[in-house]
Amino acid sequence: MDSMKDTKAITVSGITKKYGATTAVDTVSFSVDEGEFFGFLGPNGAGKTTLIRMLTTLLKPTSGTAVVACCDVKKDPAAVRREIGVVPQAMTSDLDLTGYENMDIYGRFYGLGARERKERIAYLLEMVGLTSRAHDLVAAYSGGMRRRLEIARVLVHRPRILFLDEPTIGLDPQSRHVVWNFLDKLTEGDSMTVFLTTHYMEEAEVLCSRVAIIDNGKIIALGSPSELKAGIPGNDIISLTLGNISEQIMTKIQGLPFVHQVKTEDTSVRVYVDSGATNLPALLDEVKMSGGTVLSATIHEQSLEDVFIHYTGKSIREEEARKVSFFVGAGIPQKWGR
Image (cartoon, rainbow, N blue to C red):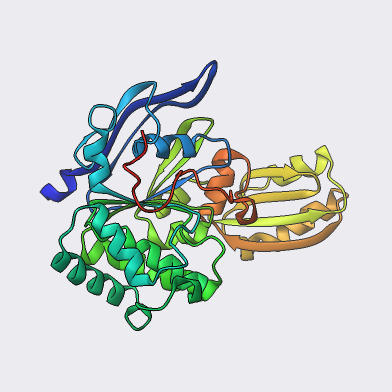
């Protein structure tokens, strides 16, 4: 067996965080392999924020353990901090400095020598396509350029694990894909382990080798995107908007041989089926014969969004993503707080 696959970048065992009578994270256990691109999804209030803050040593667990990169987050947080890079959701680069200066200051905080900083910064700026803009003020950068700079900046000290909080939120589609391409290269060139939180289902599907879904403080699903999608009954979803919904209509739909599952919300019905295009006419006929009126019908293959809805009963809406990052403080390490 490949020994690399046995090497864990993160190992979490029964980690719990309580705030008085409230349990934000409830005995969560999982591991992340070295070099893996791991995605973490969860609705607001699910415990995602609390868990990541514990992994990055910003919160102490109430119980349980987490080993990140090299050390226990409770016993040796300073050592963990030296081995990780954290890119918060909020932009934190200094607008009054150049891109190069932002990265140089970051390298100084980590004690890198002048020659090493110069070589490392040149390499990273080339990787993110900012060499020609290195000596321009960051205030003149576009949103996509600034995000690429912030990711490059936290890589100056060669962290073993990169934590990303909503790295492409607020970017236009073109800039988002540029960042995706860069992130995809990280696990190849630097054997970087990446831990991503995102509200963009497509982002998780494109980048992540495995995804964990957390809800009510517990991980409720974990696997590769293809494994998670395969775990949902039916290979297609037919979404119907009906003029009226009755118990008779629902009973008739659920009784069709190609239907695996039916979920309703107001006048919308999600029907998990085999071969949606082939079976759509029969489904519509059954609804009409049962006294229903179909206002619209759409078919799509299952996605991570459907997996999320299947397990949590709700949808992640990108526009509802938090505007305030859960990583406090500026992007440059400030003696790492307390």
